[in-house]
Image 1 (cartoon, rainbow, N blue to C red):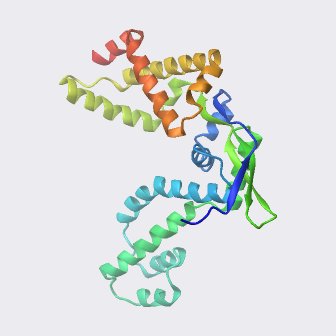
Image 2: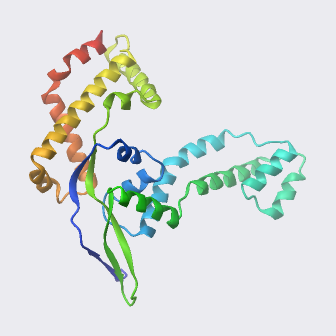
Image 3: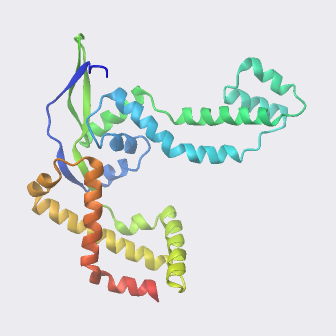
Amino acid sequence: MSEKKYFDHIDFEQEAVEIVRDPELINLFYTEGYWAVLAVLREQPLTVKEITKTTNELIVKKVSQKINESIENWEVPTDKDKLKDLLKKIDFPEDEREIILNKSKLSEDDILEIKNLAREFKLSKEMKSDKTIYRYIKDLTEKGLVIPAGRRIIAKQTATEAIYSRKAKIFLLREHADDTWKCEGCLTTLGKVAQMISLSTKKPAPSVESLVKLMSSIDTFHEDEQIRLFEQYEEKVKEIIKDCTFKETDHLLSTFRTVYLLMNHEEFIEELKDCCE
């Protein structure tokens, strides 16, 4: 095992939980690039290079399946001019470009190679540079969501690297639950949930509108209770989760939400009736 050649000097104490109410800040958690930086900083402070590497890994994981599916269904153009433009766009090797263009018919291997290069090209367009990631970090720092956490000191080097961290381990977003569940993707999901409920109960599927109302009520209930807990018992909550990783904290809060929901199921009797009619 190689010896570690650096150590991190951390000079801050991360908050356990921060409640975010500002719509502008909440929007950053759903904005391309920014959400990824906030996600990769969940577990520990990192340098810009580490944030860039991990962010790109996260982006690849998120978009690669979608890209693969779109490329798989591609119809590679047979028109020479359109094919020429495509090959140039995806950086098909120049010495092989003319060979492909001079063929009367593309083989399956030719089409596969073109699709593979197109897949790599599309993924590379999603990748972020250190410069771009640093801009995201700068913006998030100015907004108070990310903070400089200290310096990385490397053996036998005088220069050090800045380390950055999320200001809080958990950001509790105070959103408008109604708006959240009325997005196009949510409505599609709830429509499928309705079908599964119908299969399970052997009854007609509940309306999407009734499920929107139910889920909005549940989200609002959880937000109100979590905010009450974090505001009233801030120090005790910090003590409970101080040694937890983000994954453990997330699991803790998820389990609490489930148990607390069951303990207070009577709060949603009317919404549930609407779903069962």
